[in-house]
Length: 180
Image (cartoon, rainbow, N blue to C red; front, side, top):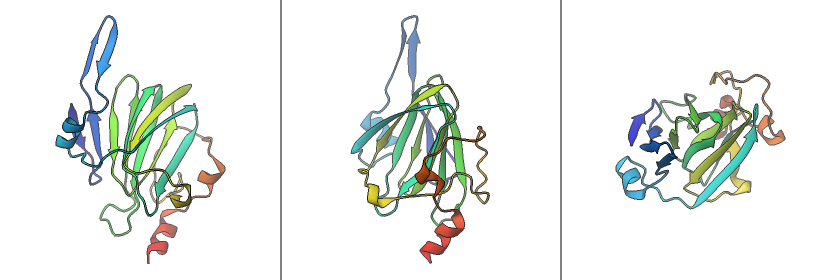
């Protein structure tokens, strides 16, 4: 597999080897030793799968006191996936990485604990998987508003469909003040 570092510390793109022929393809979506060699050393404790329709934007989510690392991929359709540094003490606070994940490109994105994460769906539907390094705790939810102009994510959709919860997430300025 090929591992590409991004501008955010610890966030990297993984391109697994895909073996294909006239019957279809085979790929390893996770293999502990190989991923450990790439720098992914935290254990996974929960796997999630979501299906969304075109125009849905989920995020940007995080857990406040029990942060989750996430290994994400898209097994059908295409999404634009984003990780944002929301640590006010970080040199890259407010910076983001965005990458298109699809069934065709087979890419994965590793997002270490502590980053906000979200994605939007670019095809009629998309199936999105993520392996998490901690369990989900609803009372620990946090996040960043999807359209914070200080971050400036160039989402490739207009008028996304959002949950009520996601519409009420704070901006970077509010996150910065909460840490002081």
